[in-house]
Length: 114
Image (tube, rainbow, N blue to C red; front, top):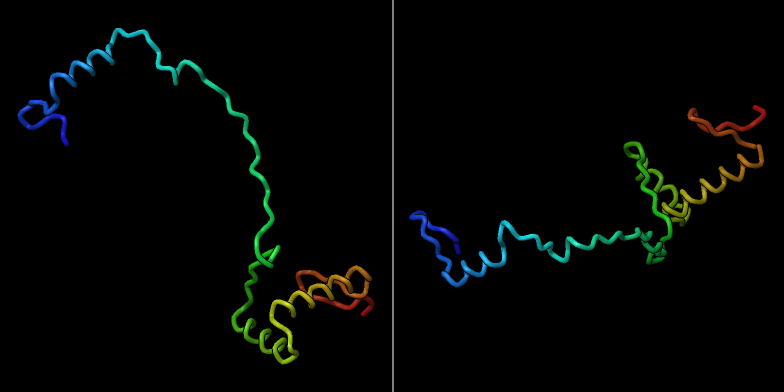
């Protein structure tokens, strides 16, 4: 409902106008209670909750074109899911690198001593 119309006449009742005039005056020195007290709120860190479901860690892997299907077919032929196969392969490579039998770099994976 508009407060004023095109004819500049108000749709507010005189009673309501008087209430507004009495409650809001330009010479008022009364500060609203919300402004009087400024409370500082200490920031409390959000509680850390464990992820729900059977997955604790999630990683999005991006393969070059066609590699996902190739890897999936390879692991399926060996009765392993894609996720299990990738996880096993990475664990194996990490174990071999730590043992000093493999070296990994941007150029690929090499046997040490070759």
